[in-house]
Image 1: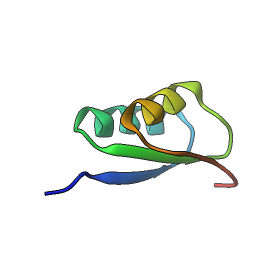
Image 2: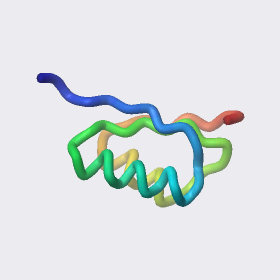
Image 3: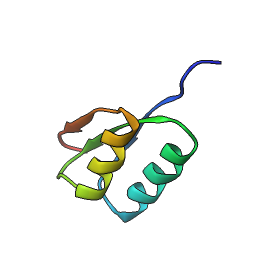
Image 4: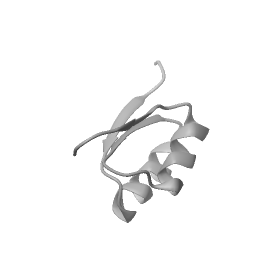
Amino acid sequence: MGETKTLLIGSGAREHSIAQALHRSGARVSVLMDYLNPGIRKVSKESGGEIFLGDT
């Protein structure tokens, strides 16, 4: 089975927790945020995902 890629939408504490859990499970976490959350940004970068800023 191939790599799991996910797109997480949001920038709050709940989304940060979800991003961490997805990263721990080996997923590549890309994120769409309306403002830059440094914790989510770190998780996304560590997982090899991308970061998109825009209206959510």
